[in-house]
Image (cartoon, rainbow, N blue to C red; front, top):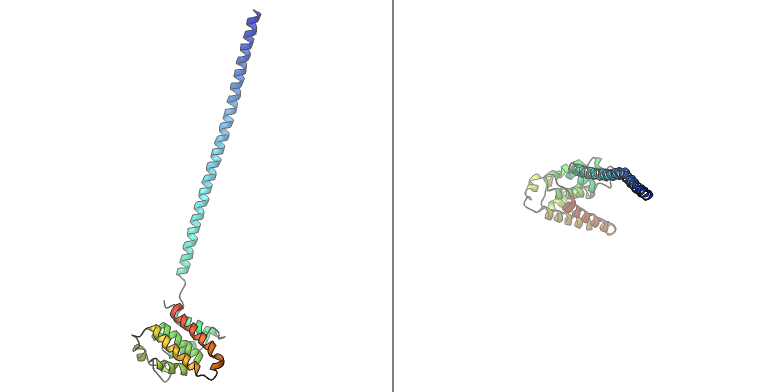
Length: 208
């Protein structure tokens, strides 16, 4: 009878231990599941935020690029006269407001010339004077009378290449410089200016 009671006690103790283990597992499992779900939710939210930030960055970058492009497209191109004044008169204190700038441009009918030749002629009028400019223009076939260029003589040169006209005119300018009294001390500077002018009118001048 005593042995049976001891066996029953062992069985009862075993059942109690099993029940306790099941209760512990039941209590632990919801917490673990909740933790895993929370981690998953956090990861998902982080990925969503990262994607949103990346999308915003791409949108902003595209917007900036488009805006920059629009701004560059609306920048106006300076007129040929403005570019001529900037190149030839940048060293003058009066700059663009020089009272004779427009007068020189009109006196030599620069508006009717190829832009490249017009800038070269304007530069000559600024640095060598209107009288010398008229003489040198006659060397390339453009005549003037009473200080005004004959438009018909310009039209007669329509078939000539503008680049060739410029080079021909600048060559006559250099020759004139060479026979100037102070050429020995200034010829190098004058030649550099003519070369810079040639490069500007044939390569950098914006004609629209």
